[in-house]
Image (cartoon, rainbow, N blue to C red):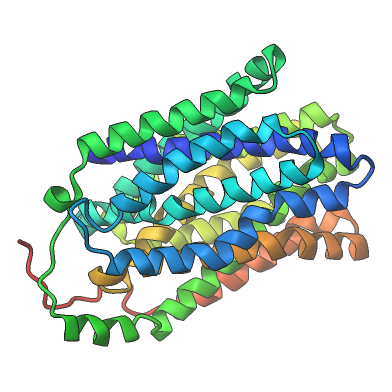
Length: 396
């Protein structure tokens, strides 16, 4: 597990960079396109559109890569320094065109190494410990987001460029920690598979179990992304909260997710990933439906506090689960699949949920989210091969 914690610095750097990006880049855009929140929102989803197309390709390409640095490391070695350069350039824009170009470049370079970074976890971890390992790297990602949100505002007040210099430093430091502590050709679990076997197995990756779990991932991320994007509007309109109160209330969900990230991975390893995910889905459906029956801010916060633990059961076990339903030679490909559907959900979720809110009102926001979670539960119930589909591989 020591190497998992060290690998977690890679995920910490990704989460920290995106948290700072999402916090401050909208302010830069507003300088050039005031009173056009829709366009700002579209430009801020650029990463999801890029991830939709680039990350599955990069994930699949990394499966086929073979260098002296390993399969995944070349993408970290290339992408992280480039991302560090462009994250520094973002606040140095001098017009809207340069800002958009720097944003685009940063999004592309971040996409180069995200899937390979995540795919390193199952590469160096035996299957029975992957849910615990995923809990650790998600915990590290949560720490990165908290550091960005807690310290970013202070640094931004000193000068708007400083948070982005800090992100560049963290990216380079994370690259040094990961590359110096993990030697992929030494630490990765090896499987003796011929070229012919590899081609045959790669063609079988899109089996029915994979399709059902991808559907489940899509539906629960539609619900999550919709709630995350519209919660402050829900809280201010339905509970009369201030913007600050609404943001603080949502932090109860994020905080309990962070605290339960590692325990939920342990539960998935002990009781099975599919079973723990289904418990999480049933729990979140109950929480989301219960929101409609609370009329106090304290009651809402308590429900969100419990809901974050159920979300950890789902989110922490989902990536190891999709890896477990495939073969070891296609970890990068399946990582790309995971990010493809989650990015698609991030694009579709907020406007879809917003459309139904426009039709029915904010009081049905959590009801619609519960329906999406129900569809995810239905999808995952059809997943066979609930754990590892064994293949004749030899550990070297």
